[in-house]
Image (cartoon, rainbow, N blue to C red; front, side):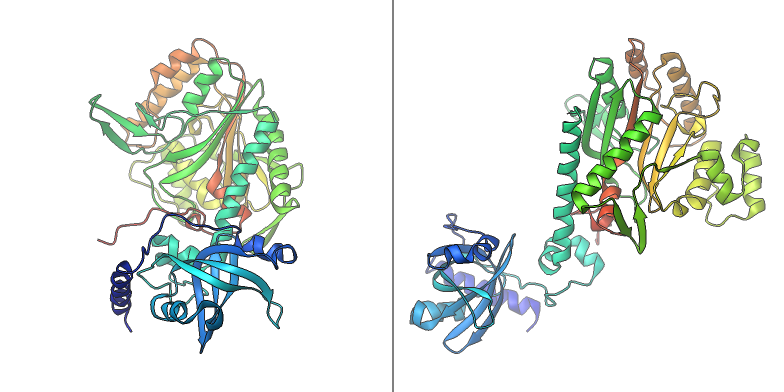
Length: 488
């Protein structure tokens, strides 16, 4: 029977049911979850209990049938017997109940001769009539695109997917708990912003009708969080959504989850020590030990993490000493001379864009064990404080684990004169066609002029962190509803 035929058959059943009962009642008398029923078998076996969930299996055997009822906690076997239910209720079960329907079942627990905990059903009630059948291959929905487009079916068919998303929730809640215990306070900043700032990225734009003004979905919460530092808060963080109008690949989704954290009176060196401790503490709580396996490679989060300068790591893996080629033309010629694969050299690249491209294509995949890349070129970091002794680099770090960039942090630039100049330089880059260069935010410069304490801050890609801790190779596997191109 084709799927459309099955749908029509079930729709016909629904119309018949509506003449007899309410097939979508509101009130449910559930007393226990399936897990609680099985876990407390000895205590509950002589009591009448009520369970509720989706019917995922049904095996008819004359005047008896076994089924499996699933709720969020797991599934349990249920036993429908003609002698217990009576003729009318047993025939109703056979004629009107299908896989995927939600049932309320009441009865007593017992163990089968194989030792399986089972509910002997004394009465049952239809809670939801499902009109579409469950995925045919119950033990694995294989079509990757279908899994992502119809995540609800993916969750039904693949128990490992449900585990991934429950682990995601646990990671985020544990992270919050650790930070709260460290004396940080969680804050909220606007998602709709009049100017996009805080990162080098192309924003999404929308229009507010009442104010007759364009707004941007935030690419980062950074500048607003710094205003809170100026206002007197000293240890703050925010976990929330950010949006970047960029390509989609295994590490990028236009809508993603970020955590930004700011620690007043810290510098980037102290913040590296802090994030080491934070990640190890998080991993131990989630994984019981500070070791994981990611994509077939064993990773040990053991202090201290390796630290290497941006200049040195680029030279090691690309053969280019970037500070010997201080203009874009000479750097481009060097890239072409070395014939480095996969480096996209646009028609009019800027020096920082080309340097970043070299880093992405030659360095990242090699950083498997925890590694801090530090002291980035100043043009790459418009919001970071310059190294006082080497102004061509900034006090910045990026943490890489398993080839993924997980953390980006730096000693925050709190010199308003320097910040104004950096914004001017970014404005010049925008004139050359760099849509990801930062806009000039003079209101933020004005806020800095009131004074911001010495501060170190960082951003954590929550989705990538979850990829790492759940051993997933694609960001789509840890986002419930990733962005996909419309089929129309």
